[in-house]
Length: 171
Image (tube, rainbow, N blue to C red):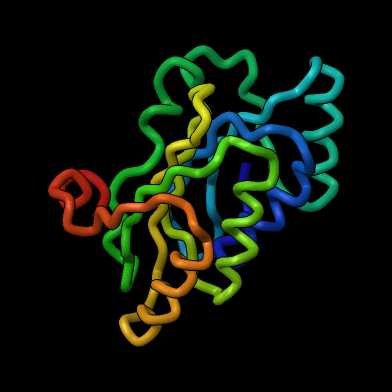
C-alpha cells in the first residue's frame, strides 16, 4: 500500500488496522512524497480482507491485495528495501517488541517527537518478542531526547548504525 511520506503516517495506518495483528511490515524510504509499504495483516477470512482493503482505500490510501501473488509472497517481501542515500541523520536500531497487542502503537505514540521513520522491518515469528529493525531520522541536536525516548519505552534495543551490513546494503 501507499502512505504519505511524513511523520505520523505509520501511526495513522496502524490505527486504521485496529486490533488486527500485523504479521509483517517492510518499508524503506525512497521518495519524499510517498511511502510504499509491504504489509501482512492477520484476517479471519477473505471477506474481512476485502473490507479492510476497501476501508483503507476510502481513507485515500492506495492498496494492492497481494494475497494470491506468489512472487510477492515467496520473494519480493524479503527484498523490500535497499539503499536510501538521500536520508539525513539516519540512525538504525534493533528492538525486541513485547509480543502483545498495542506494543507497536506504544512505540509509535511514545515517538511523538516527530522523527521520521526511514526504515521499518517487523516480522512476527510466534515468539514472546517481535524482532524489529527501525531507521529514524534524528538530528544530532535531538539525541538526548531520543535517548530519553528509548529509556521511557523500556524495550530491549541495540544501535546498529555502525553495523557493516547496514553500510553495505541499506545506507
